[in-house]
Structure formats: structure tokens, C-alpha cells
Length: 335
Image (cartoon, rainbow, N blue to C red; front, side, top):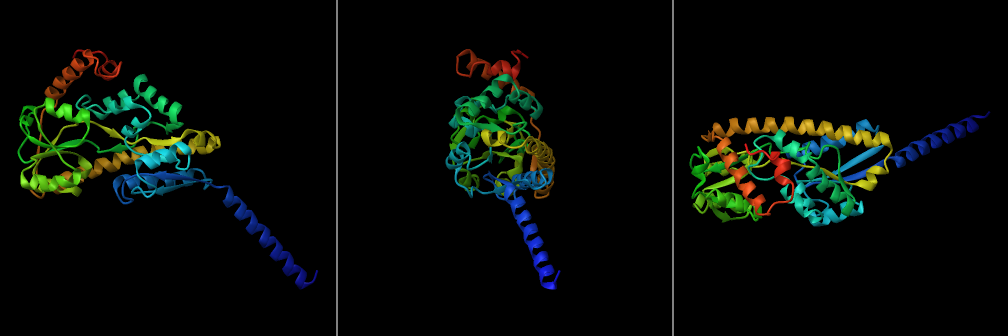
């Protein structure tokens, strides 16, 4: 064999190898993951962790491209894309599923669950599972794994210009409120003087006295700096939040089983990571704002939750709640 033939043979082998690599790369499937938060936010960090783990667990056969900060569109647009399958994952509060399941607005009732564990148990009840099943039946959209594994919050607080040491102190408090029917009814029942304000208007409202308090996830306390005008923070556990990874069910079912299992494993690991990260952030937040003169007040929660349980039972008796909600949430208990 001449040198020229040897060279041509080597080039042919190299070309075939390159074609093999290219063909292998072409077989990798790409999924698009949309969310609202900045990429460097705690939630954004967790979503990228999930994507990286999927790539590792599937040996690159499935790639998750994460699009933060509504890069692929606002919620209405994303829901259409999710239903069509042009977006594969959308991670956000389950409230958005109201588009297809109106009852799911009750997935996180205010002041009904003192602990996150109690709330997660409720979300695993037949009632709530039925709501998620309806979303799949109507829109072909399904939650990946444990729907509430991804943590937001991790808990809620009341930021105020005076100490709130018992729930009776809420009477007459000028509280910034948002346009949510249940939240409005709950806080009015506690005697708050509601001020309907945009989130971005809240700091100035606290500064001017238009508002005296605002509710917030613990994770946003430091970033929003409301405590500069209202230097008292009270943990309320008002409601709990999880962020289901809603996906196009048909796309998931079409994946090889090994890739389905990889997604489930990556999701479970991301949920554990989110709990760790959110808890650490909340602890660091408290230390940071206390160093700036903020006072954390401890309000006994049992009397508040007992009162609200009675409030929900009265509404249930009046036929104003979804059938089965009280039994799923409170087990029919009168405690």
C-alpha cells in the first residue's frame, strides 16, 4: 500500500469516526425548561442543578436547556407551549393550573397547615391528586415526581412597623395586599386594613405610611429591603409553596425508560437540594437583617390556626369550599 493510499485510508476512517460522533450527538434529545426567576436566584440555581444532573444521569442522551426570567414568554404563552409540547417543563406555583383546574386555587389554603409536612400530606390526598389528574386529562400536562418537592419560601413572614406578638395585633394593621380572593377574605377576617398595592410599590408605601406591613416569603426579605421601613419580622407560616415541574405528559411517556428514571431521580435530588439551599438562605437572611437592627418576634401560632380552622369549617358548612377539602385538610377533626 502506497503512502498516498495509507493517508486516504486514515482520512476515511477519521471521517467515518466524525460521522459517528455527529450521528450520536444528533440522537441526543433536547428539552426546554421555562421559569420566571433570574438564573442566579436560589430557584434558578436549583433548576440548573436539575438540568446538570439529567445530563449526567442520561450520559448526555437528554439535554435540558433552562430558560430563566420568562425568556420564552409570559405565563399564558408558556402554558400554551407546554400543552403543545414546544416547552417541556414549566416550574411554578400550582396556582397556574387554574387555567385547566379551577379548584386548584385551594392547593395552599392560608393558615390551615402549621407545618410543611402537614401541607405536603394534604397535597398527596386523593382530592389534590385528582386536581392534578384533571390537568393531565384536559391539557396533557403532568407533574414530574413528587409535585411539591421543590421548595419556595421556605416559609412566610409578616414584615411590620410594630411588633406582632399575637394574632389579635393584626386588627387595624394597614397591610399591603394583592388581588387574590382567598387572601383578601382571610386577612379581612383577622381585622387587617387592606391596601391593594403592587409588589413594586410596597417599599414606598411602607415609607410613606400608606402601608404598615407586608407578607412575604422569607427568601425575599433581604432582597426587597422592606425591613428598612418596617423593622419587625414575624414568622406566620401563612401558607406553604411548592413548585411542580409541570411537563408535557406525552413527551415524557415517549422517552426511553432509563431517561424517565433519570428525570425522576434528578427531580428528587433537586428537591432535596432546594430544601437545603432555601433553609440556609433563610438562616443567613435572619442573621444579616438582625445585624441591621431588625427584630424577629415570636407569635404563638396555635391560637391563630385554631381560629382559622373554625373559619374554614364555617365556609364549608355554607357550601363555599370544594367538596372534601376540609376532610382532606383536617381529617374531619374538630380539634
